[in-house]
Structures are given as structure tokens and as C-alpha cells.
Image (cartoon, rainbow, N blue to C red; front, side, top):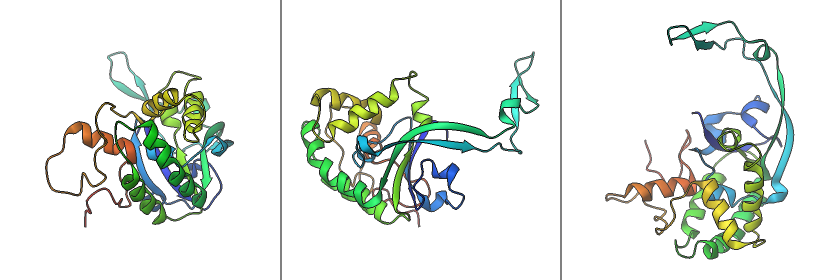
Length: 233
């Protein structure tokens, strides 16, 4: 799905396992995903020291089909552009941490988030559900594939905002500025209490804003089940 972020578990200490790890199985390795944001509690598992820069080789896809607009405004197929016909090396910066450390950092961040979002309410139950989802996933490392989200931001603005948001989780810097960065990255709708962690599990109608904020806190199931969504079995 375009413009998405992916919380991934992998045994390979590498960014973007969907590209770099030939053994990566998205149906098991993608813990959760979201669209046009990086959920708040995913961020809570990482700190500035977990920002890793790595050169990623993006292999050319011999089966890819390319299109452009024709004279009548319709899509017409074109030959493969020269720049797409060869492997490309891309320098990427994203989040990567050993799973045990990421979970410990999540636990440490919950009280900090409780102070930053005192008006919205506690997040202990939400964090516990995310912890369960991560614990059920394979892999020794957690990473977030977020290049599609970075591409939605003005050039040069995403990484500084991400770093400032992560710094705020250690109680460093200006708390209000940290809160603003966290809200922007997670695309939360502030000004209303956080929805209960069991919002989608319990019977009853839910406001659209509450469903929105629950997903912005935790993400959504990609393929593997997640504890905050009803089972599809």
C-alpha cells in the first residue's frame, strides 16, 4: 500500500528487510502498518541512538511496467527508463533496535507520554497490546520502514522532526515542542481523550475520531493478527 509505514521484525540487523532480507516474509515479519504516519507507540520503542544510516541496494525489477500520459491524456506503456533498468544504491536513515531493547524503551516511554499527553489520558493498556504483538513476531530486531512517509514531507524536514520527537521520549528538550513533533509524525487528532485500547474489541459504536486515533497510536494489522483488532478467524 503506498504512503505507508511498516513495523517489521527481522533476524537480520538491517534496515528495510523487505528489500535487504531475502528470507523476510511480510505475512509474519510485518507486525503492523499504517498510512501517511508513524504511529505514536511505534516511536516510543526507539531513541535517537536507534537512527541508523545504511546503503540499500534496490534491485531492478525486470517485470516492472512503466507508463506515461499519452497525447489524449490516457496512460500509455513505455519502455523501461534507463535509470530503472539497473540496480540502485540508496542511502537510507531509519529506526532499528534489538527487540528486547525496543520493548524496554517502550516501557520507559509510557510514563513520559503520560506527562506529554496528560490531557489525553494513559497509554499503559495500549502499550501492553503492542508489546504482545511484538512478542508474537519472529526476529531479534525491530525496525520501521518509513521512507514512504518521509517522502510526504518537505525535503530536509522529516529527519530533524523524527530526531526531536525521539529525544522528547527521554524527557530531553522542550516538552511542548516534543509533543508537537510526536503529534505531527503520528497524525493524531489531539484535543480528545485517547480511545480505550479495546475500542475495536468491545461492542458498541465508536466515533470516527476515536478509531482514527487508535490506529495512529498502534497501527493496524497487515497480515498477522494484532491484539487490538477482532480476530478474523
